Length: 430
Ligand SMILES: Cc1cc2nc3c(=O)[nH]c(=O)nc-3n(C[C@H](O)[C@H](O)[C@H](O)COP(=O)(O)OP(=O)(O)OC[C@H]3O[C@@H](n4cnc5c(N)ncnc54)[C@H](O)[C@@H]3O)c2cc1C
Image (cartoon, rainbow, N blue to C red; front, top):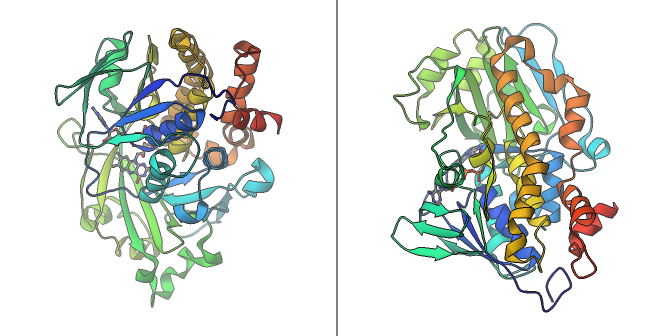
């Protein structure tokens, strides 16, 4: 029996381009709906990379909906951040001090991206769980698609046809070019911005009492420092508190047109850029190894996210700065809203109508968060707005994506023959 409860309904053939967090989350959600899913991923995943990602309560809700395991994801609870001036003097500001579960109903977590990615991959392709496991094609890049006909052209020359194509191929999305009929790239920010990133073992702090403050209170939160010039240095633990993830955002003096988006850097470059910082913070940066530097880019507002039977989700639609820690959350929200509008029993001729509904529910919110994340990084007067504004926190973190989809579905599409799947309705009743 499929999740919709209709044993005779015909599953849709769904192609997902890209196996990042968006692609796997969409695959997990569509699989649970009873559809047949194939994922096409350009990389071989031979060496998984990345630092940590924040999983705010609106994202945790979705991971629970998809049946994730907090233990497998090795997630660490986040209980707010302590923010300090880079001089090491002045008061400590406590950001996001409201307890997450009591305030928004779910935990706020910090997770290594590789752990989160592996967990969502398991939910999409693992043998356990509802529906048919999604089939993953690694080293299989998508070249283009015919969005109206649902025809996917792969870089290896093969051509396949599907009922629905989901473009989850990230900031350099090829699917986006096919959906829009033109190339739209993420431009360099009005103030070019970049982030040094590195992860170090907690054991690196042993025997260094001057760095005890990084782990105080069991390291259940973030430690933030800021400078007047806009430097922003943040760390938080992940992977069962065995690793500390650090990110150092700054205005980028390099010519961003001439360098890769994510390239190797060094402790020396980091310390040079953050030289205005007090010695207690430099002692933290002195421990950095394997430093990489990422350009921060955000997608402009796109004309549309939908064409025919093809749509965009995640970074392909709304790549954003990490300022609000909502990147992974927006990706997860897109995925379950999309799948929630397309239960088993949806006919191929209804897909465009559902994709339009998805765009109506998601585009404004995704673009709002992307815009705010950039503004709050590059406009000095706007810095820290999110950490101070309960209204904005509530707007982002009370969002219940499965419920949003279920209510919309019930109101606009449900008929006696075609009911929203039980899992979505269950959330809607909460
Ligand atoms: C390797 C990697 C490491 C990252 N590390 C971090 C991190 O440490 N912290 C953080 O906050 N964010 C990180 N991010 C970004 C973060 O995961 C995304 O911003 C966010 O989760 C959105 O996910 P997404 O799935 O939409 O896009 P992405 O994560 O970019 O995933 C897109 C996927 O599509 C694949 N792809 C691209 N083009 C094609 C094509 N033509 N055909 C088929 N497949 C294609 C890519 O290989 C990738 O797997 C990382 C992204 C990547 C790809």
